[in-house]
Every structure is written in C-alpha cells, then in structure tokens.
Image (cartoon, rainbow over all chains, first blue to last red; front, side):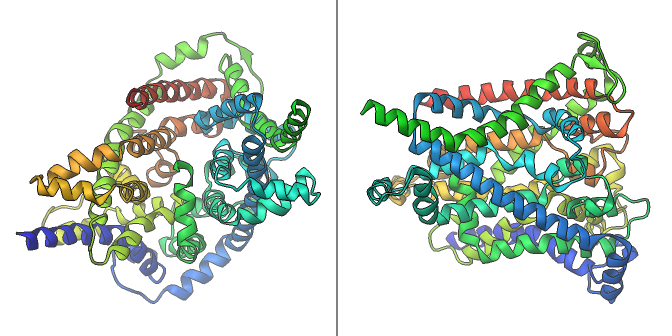
Length: 268
Length: 291
C-alpha cells in the first residue's frame, strides 16, 4: 500500500515535470525544423537550423534588438538598485513618522494597474520628445514601491552597529551608505538585481507603446511581431525565442540561490 | 538629543526624496491625469469635456462587457486551479526522503524564467490545428478529429488558461514550499500517531499553516490576472471575434489600435482600478480577520 502511494506520488511529479519541460524541448527542436514541419507538429530534430539562423539575422533586426534589450535591462537594473536601495535604507535607518506616512502612501502605487497610467505616460514622454528612446522605457519602471519595500525589509536585518562604528571613524552619512551598507548588503543587491533584470528583459506592454521604429525595439517586441505577421515563419521564431530565453535560463542556473531568495525576499 | 535626531531625520530625507519624487511623477501623477482624461472624449490629442458621457457609454458597451467577462473568467477559473496545483506539488516535494526532489523542483520551476511573449508563442505553435498537441491527443485516441483550438471561443480560452497555469504554477509552488519547510515535522509525526491520514494531514495541518502565504499569492495572482495582456495578445490577439480579449488589451486597442480615443480608454482603465480596489479591500478583510 505504501509502495503504491509512493509510485503514485512519483508518477504525478514525473508528469508535472514532463509538462513543464516539454515546451523547452519543443523550442529547441523547433530551431532545427522548417515552419511547416513545426506547424504540422513534427517531433524530432530537423536540418533547417542554419537556414533559420541566417533568415532570422537577414530578415529582422534581431541583433539590434538584443543590444537594445541588454542596454535597457542593464541600465534599468543599475538605476533601480541605486534608487530603491537608497530609499529603502532611508526609510528604515532614518525612520520618522512623516517618512513612514510617505512610504505607506507610496505603497498605494503597487495597486495601480499599468493600463490605467500608460496613456498619460505616453502623452508625457511624447511632450518631452523622449518617445522611441531607451530613456522612455527605463525611467517609468526604474523606481518601484515594491523594490523599495524589498530593500526596506532586508535592511531590518542590517547590523546598525556598523554605522555607529563608521561614524566614529568620521565617515559622513552618504559614505556610510556607499562604503558600509552597500558592501554588507551584497546578497540583497544580487537578489534584487536578478529579479529586476528579468522584469526589464521581459517587459512587453510599455516598450510596445514607447518604442516605435524597428531599430529601437527590444527582443520581446521583435519576437511578437515575427509571430503576428501574416505568414509567420516558426523556424525563425523558435531561434528568436531561444535567443531571448537563453540569458534568463543561464542566470537561473548560475545563480539559483539568489534567484529564489530574490523571489521570496519580500515575504520574509 | 532632540537636535541630533532632527538632523539625522533631515539627512534621511536626502535618501528618500528622489525615489519618492519619481514614483509620484510616474505613477501618482499619471493616475490623476487618467482620471481627468476619463471625463474627456475625442480623437488623439484633440478632446473635449464630456462629463460622465464616457461612463454611461461604458455601461452599454458590449465590447467592454465581453472584455470584463473574459478577464473575470480567467480570474475565477485559472487562479484557483493554479494555486491548488502549486500547493499539491509543494506538499509532495516537502516529503522527507523523496527521491529526485531537486530535479522535480527545478523542472517545475523552470517555466518561470521564460518571457511572457516567448512562452505564449510556443503555446500558439503547439496548439496549431495540425500541431503537436492535436497529434498527441489523436495518437492516444482521446480525440478522433483535430480540434481547432485557437479558432474556437471556448477552446481558445482553455489554451490561454492552460498556458498561464504552465507559466506560474512553479512560481507559486516555491512560495508554498518555503513556507512548508518552516512547519515543525513533529506536528506531522504527532498527527500520524493519532492516525490522521496523509490526505487529512494536508487539509488539517499543511493548508492552515501556510494560509498567510496562500493569501499573499492569491493577491499577486489576482492583480496579475486583472492586468493580463502579453499572453492574450500573443496567443490569440483577442480572437476569435474578441472572445478572449481582456480589459488591458481593450484599453490598448482603444488607445493605439482603433482610432485613438484616450478619454474613453482612461474611463475603461478606471474600471480596473475600481475592481482592484474592491478585491484588495475584500482580501484585506479576509486576511485581517485572522489577526
């Protein structure tokens, strides 16, 4: 009886794992097949890999898109880390009634659906003449109440004695932040960097509105437009999907611990 | 002492001022602008004040009703299925001495690293009429004729729900697993000695113990589903005949696909704001009662 229960358990988990992994196998096989084979559900490796790659690079600005995505994700992540960690540090280390009130108010922004703010944002950036630039994509998402909250929560476990020791050594308040807080909180920064990078790398709706010309577009926009064309070539699309998925899969496997910590960090 | 405290509080403001200003500028200010816009109507940047005109139009707009219906359908069907699946998987993975635990956990979590656009298109390709999924079902003799998944209003919604569940179950599972690992194993041992079955233990021990996390994941999932956009645009583009369109997509279409009417789009967006606020209130009530 115990034996049967154990087999049942494994059977369930094996099926769940196969379902989870199947689309990955499908995408890797898809890279080597022609579009018509993919749409006909061919489940084996084909010989169209080279053609798919050269068609993708010749027929779409995929190289530009990769660079654009990288620039936006990296600059966006650095900005987010600087701004949100400073705020989280300020709200927690220099607590005061008014700052608590302000923070509580800022948290309301987490409940604002993006669809409700995107039109005024679009008008704002068009007035500033910044549409169709990386800045337009980066600026609105650089500071989030969620990330400030994340740093604030983690700052609770930061040893305050270190700051006192730094003051004795004659460091000013900003130096305490950059020379003591930042190095001590490296794991928190790493976790925050991973989730922010992922969110920036995969962002779709706002870049879709803010970026208009093909050479400015990011990977998700190019992948989406390849797939929504009148006669989509799935062989090419699969290569594009792998290119846009590979960096995040790599980050996950190399930094699994920080990755999970980053996800869970806000519920501690 | 008082003076010193004031000084340090003043320095604290330097750290929070710029980030707070940016959130006010890029979230709160647009929220207000959007509210003002919702009383205006017109094409593109030329618009005039119409009072509650947009709001009365909203009430009799069949497309809005369809989008609202779809969004709520996704919410009440998909979120419970996904959270329950996540709980069961986390519970199974939390058993001591389970073999291949690391493999299962990594495999089931892996969908979370894909971009929403990419996995949506993968699903679109797998659910083609002659595609791999129909082929699989026909080989297993579950169906005799291929199903036109994305051409049928009901099946198209099923595909979207299945896709979202594939992408997010592992994400929720990780939250539950970390909560379950904090439960003292002796609680289960005591229950076993008292003769409680595994089934009983799951419902009487595990679920009550992780309830706060279930509430947390329910709130994020609800918020995410109400704003659903990427999947629907990339799997069905709202079709066939708007039968899968969500509110976010309708707002996008009103602003950037049809003849742009920012005023009316802003009105529709306030419908989501109201739903989010109401649901958050209900969920906070439920969460607050326990304390």
